[in-house]
Length: 267
Image (cartoon, rainbow, N blue to C red):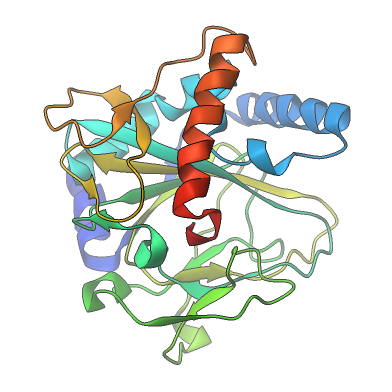
């Protein structure tokens, strides 16, 4: 891939894929680590679905993987904050889906120069409910949403755009395990249920240039992963020195406390 091809696709369509980040074996090892933790805790506790790079050293290394950051730098520049990470897991034959929405709707980040890098720890296919995008929809700006709170909707509010989306316009961002896609904070996207017999596991990394600011809620924190921060719009987070050590747990608790005071359902 070249910076120019990433920039052109991202600018015109609002997304770019695929980006090879990990080998299949490396992706499998990340899945093994996640599932070993799930086995110990009877699933993934809600508090560790978000910003888990603050307590897991393997995820801290992953958010600064050069193949991800090189692609992100191509579209938002060299000074990069990781604002959050979210696990998106669909169990086999699970009815869970993600409605057509824009990430920007409840985040309160300005200007809207936020990019999501979505990394598959498993294959992400049409059958198991890969991310789907509406090409060029980011050029329409912010669209009004309404909250459905649908039982099977994986979004916290079940938020969806208040415009009719022609399903035929959707493009499936199919990925092999270890590949990633980029999408713009304003691009309309969603996903279908997992109709396969295996889990679909992905991690969404939210990156922003350091000049972006929080315009709603409390002052939040973020991790500087490349370049310098000359703006100070976020409190900078420390890297974990060991998995779930005392300092890492305190950092994560602080970040999640800010997150929850702003309103977890805004994410």
